[in-house]
Image (tube, rainbow, N blue to C red; front, top):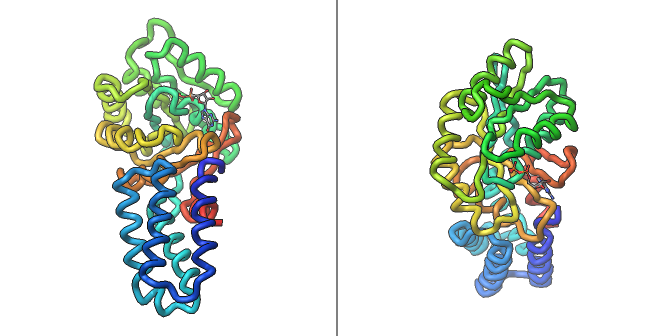
Length: 300
Ligand code: GDP
C-alpha cells in the first residue's frame, strides 16, 4: 500500500545502515531510535504514540535481548517488527456475527471518510461469502446520501432500505429500527447501517449517531477514518470513541497517500482494532486488516 511507502523506505534504509555494524553501542541504538522517531513523525503518527513506541524499542534494544544476539542488528529489526504489530493491534480481528441473525453493523465517521463506499464494499464481500446483506440509508442529512447508497447498492448487487416519503423521513433512528424488522421479515442476515457524517466532529451528529446505536444495539459499530487526515486522526477517533463507543476501525483511502499516521495512531489511542483497510474507489478494493502482514509490508 502506497500509504506507508515513505515510512517504509526510511526504516529499511535505517536498518540497512545498522546491519553494517556488528555489536551495537548505546550510541548506535540511540541513533537508530532517533531515525525511527523522525520517520514516524514524518508519517504523521501522533507524538504520544511515537514517544511510547520509541521508548519501548529503545529499552528492548539496549537490553541483553540484543546484546547477546548473534546478529544484533537483525534483533533490533525483529523488535521494531513486533512493536509495530503491537501498535497495529496485534492479532487479526475478524468481523463478529450475531448468534441470531440479522447481524447489525453500524457505520460512523466524518463526511467524506468513505462510509458509503465501504458499506458497498462490505456488502459485496459478504454477498460473495454467501450472506444476504442489505444496506440502510440512515444518512438523511446530506441531500444525495440516499441516492448515493442506492448507486452503491446496485453496484454491489444488494438491496437498499431507504425511507419512503412520509414514512419516518427525517428520523434516522426510526429508519434504522424499521430496517432491522424489515431484514428479519425478508431474511436478510446482515444489516449495514450507513449514518450521517459532518465535515467536522459536531455535537448534534454525535448525539444522533449515539441515538441510532442505542436504538438498534449493533453487533459492530465500525468507525471509518480517512487515513489521509493525518494528525487530526487522533482527535477525531477519540471524539467518535466517546460518542458512539465503536467496536472497530476501518481505514479508508490507504491507497491515497504516502503517510499512514492514522493507521499507526488510532489503535493505540482508542484501544480498538482495525478490521478492514479500504484501498481504492472500486468496490473490490477492500482488505481484511492483518497487523502482522501490515508491519511486514512496512519493514520489507
Ligand atoms: P462518506 O461521506 O463517509 O459516505 O464517504 P464516501 O463513501 O462518499 O467517500 C468519499 C469519497 O472518497 C468518494 O469520492 C469515494 O469514491 C472516495 N473513497 C472512498 N473510499 C476510498 C478509498 O479507499 N480509496 C480512495 N482512493 N477513495 C476512496
